[in-house]
Image (cartoon, rainbow, N blue to C red):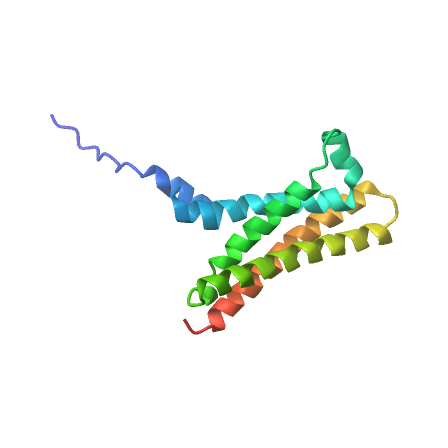
Length: 156
């Protein structure tokens, strides 16, 4: 007697990654999705480093990672801006210039904001750390929505 149970179709392992919002590994996705994604982590770490440098010094006592975090933040956000639809028709040199400008202004402006926050708040490291992390997430969110808006109103 043959079994009447239906065998369920095997699911592609990529569907799990799709649900997480991850993309397949290829050159384009590594440069314009994964590097900016990792850069967001550096950006958040940079916020903590600026508002609460003692915390980072306790974790990594022998090295100052500020420059590395800042460079990583600039590279990732620059690649993210470079790949936006509203810049696709711009000349290569313009795309480089505009994305570098946006990344540098975003990153250095954030560092300045965090330094001001640190100078205005009392010496409460926990409050500074939470405010730094919260502001980094908020700034990334607002920046992404801003670029989404520019893309939506641009004529490609």
